[in-house]
Image (cartoon, rainbow, N blue to C red; front, top):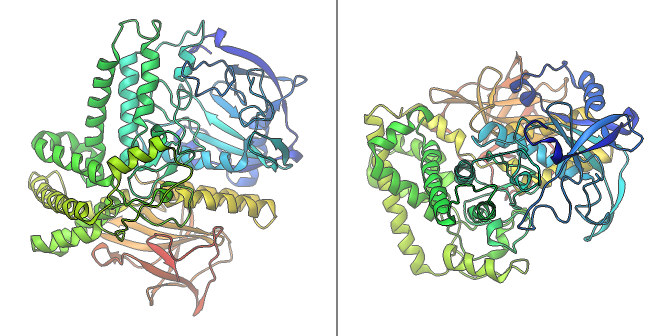
Length: 622
């Protein structure tokens, strides 16, 4: 209230939901620890405390006060007919609850998606997953989701799309300024002030970093970003497979596609520039656009170098030593990574099992090329191996349409991002070859300057460049099946919490993924019985690990591609884990068919999304 001003808020009353009507679905202990919150040990101990603190909903007879924030959007996109938060309110000093019911500022019809006041539990659980990703792996950050509460009884909800019985939830978000949005700046009497140039740079940094992270918001508006550049309201967020344009919710607007959302950011800045109150220096949109693109390019260079394997503390020096190399490599990385074969239907992130259509897979290349550099002494052998890493998709030049896609989006994507004939592909492969040669020489140059260690870079790039399986469309499907299992009674609430927690850990690449005091987790797969994955321990070594969910599950070995590795049990502050012997990163198989064994008997691993052999993942259960 001090930041935004009293005139922004409407006071409402909330009632505490009885414990019999609500349960804890997820509590993010890692975020709580980062924020310095003290937590009781064990799920059973935390559940009543979380339900009491966050289990609140709108009721005029309630005894708890909360504050709902007014918002305005001159673009007419963010508010959907409401005058502010239609289903969320601030409670206490730093908590914002979403899904509390219809607030007085919800003017959209009750039978509309933005007017009923509740949050579908699938969207709420997904926000927990996406929030964790940005909290731990991005520099722009978010308002972190601390807890997810599930209402035990579903509600009958009618919207403009359907009428259905829906399980709803309450999301508890932590706000220390991350929820201060551009839409607050247009509210009469608002005390919030933000520099337009600072916002421009913050928006640009988010867009550039999203490209290297490989994530699309999917519903970008002035209400889904903070004035400081935090990403907000993430139920449409998806990680993409490849870096060509893809969409998660609607294909009607170019600015909702991966790699193109910067267009929406500039529209928001243009609306702010047209406001005398928010643009006292009368900056032109040309000046703002120039600042935006300059900051975007600077940030893209830094975040790309991180993916290339350069340690964060050395990036500035590398840019100073190799400016021409950096400019060429980053520019070609961005241009080549955005190309795809012309199957427009495969651009929807929600199509689970869609064919891979990217022309060049840079995540795969960057994940494995440093191993190739050490294994192949001949430059031509490294180039040919690099091309093989880049080219994983079979060429398909036949145009496949997409009825969901507007003509505006189709024309843009086909003209600028699609490869529709063989001659184009041949020319692009020459560019890819030039990229690999330049990248190889760049790595040698940086190594000679002692800014890149040839051994640790193998470990680092393998972890950083893993695609985020559990925040992609596959992960969304997994969440839906996970929550259906809970609804049917096939999954206990504590194991639901464990599964969502494992999903969040599986998505981390840059921080928060140190585990068991043994190394950095990667290639994680989550099953009903627990988690299986790899631990990269440093110095070019890794091992396989299994973290069981059941106390009585004690595997003795893991069989990988037919070879059995003995597992030994260890206890750490992160819990009980079973690990294999240490293996060399240089000998790691790209695909690993595995089985957990108890004695000589395989343990039947089950998951919640009916694993298909076509799912592109490093660890594949036998």
